[in-house]
Image (cartoon, rainbow, N blue to C red; front, side, top):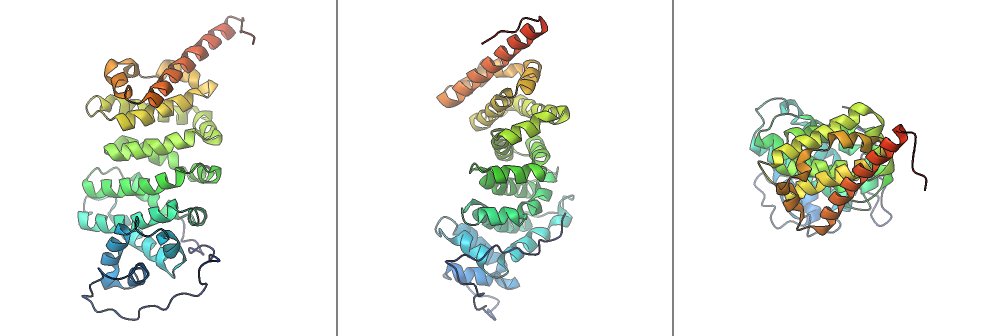
Length: 317
């Protein structure tokens, strides 16, 4: 894990004051924070005895305060406080000792980071400060208990917020920091929602030209991705999920856009994709059904081209 970046708080917005707000110097231990403003709740994060409740109330205020991300990013010490909350449970990630209470508290901090990752003004500074790296330990754990799963899912939500907007810079950052293996681990050990979000992230990476090249240029990397997709397909027979199947199909489709990968898919595409039980899950979504049919066409046409090349009679035109 790298050291904390020297500058965590981003560039001051021209619309925001450049001086730090006056800090609340003291708050009674049993202060009721329910009626405090967002600004006051952010300041309450500076106090150990009000921090947990302030985290909870702020995370619940995300949809009601459009500028919450900007306020969090530009307020003095807030990002550092959120990172401190995150790092305090690192030592429990390889143990079953992590409690739901401790996990929930960290999830409040992660939810606020997701807010920052989602906002157009703070997304890029958030990424350039390498804040997502502090979430990777939560994606790397193999423990399946609820407290660990909560952290896994909420951390994936932060990364998912970054990739929702098509931004090459975000994809390059995630590739450079090796997000794909972490997503594959979540696809293997995570519960349904974690699998779905992790697969969505991989899908968004594959939709980028550089991301597709990254995933297909090394055979072991390609096989790891297809193995993870196939394993999830097998488990879908026990717990059907139309949403997860949709992302799996889209991942296969994007892989089929690479001639080299498409050739491999001719041998590795799960037979279950042709099972009626799975195709029935797609029938209610014409877009996904169209993607599924295009996937099969890509694999079939690529196989024909390869056979023609081997026979020394490639088609022209």
